[in-house]
Image (cartoon, rainbow, N blue to C red; front, side, top):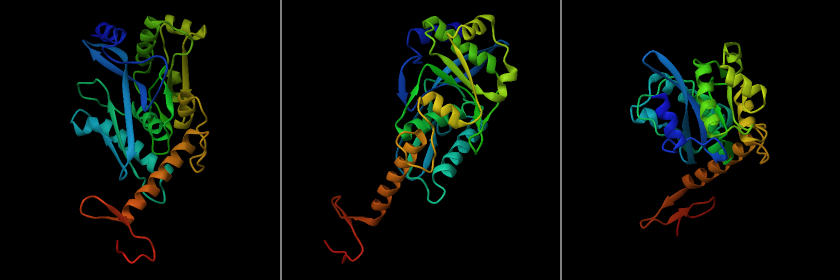
Length: 268
């Protein structure tokens, strides 16, 4: 199964990019067990966002293809997003998350960091580096937490990158709390030592965000377009203004919207 999956990726039947950039798309890392053997493989995670009423939809859960621990991870990242950017009023977005090209049950919260990065990328309209893959869970404060199978996950992405040709830009992002668990194969260790592959350890989502977006994470309280969090703050503010304007309007038969401002007689 491991070899068949890697061949499918190399033939672009399973779409996993290891170069370039993309908005709302992240390479997550998963572990599979077959016949008592464990192996890691990258999984494409995507997110979309638009003006809405504050929902973050977990498509895996909606289609009964996500387990309770995975659902918990998505709820936690939703809480992080709301508490960071929308403490005063509910954020006005509708977002969705999905594991692309997966056809079995998705369980565990080790992809919640990747899902959060894909979501933040989508809201900010900032592309994410596809040469990097990420694993880790997050808490409601954005701290990155340890996960299982870290060695298999790293080696799974390394094998794909090596088969396509290492160019020094590829690597993985893992929780700093997993560094003590690393026992990688000699080939991976040699590639890291030679600078042809990298293992980045992070403690907070902002570290991962800056690394994978290639721009500062920034202050979420300042709408600075030069930072990812600043772009998110500005986008959510704009959405909130649009939604507030929509709520002030009333709809005529035929679809015409009349906005009633202070002092208007309500006619038209």
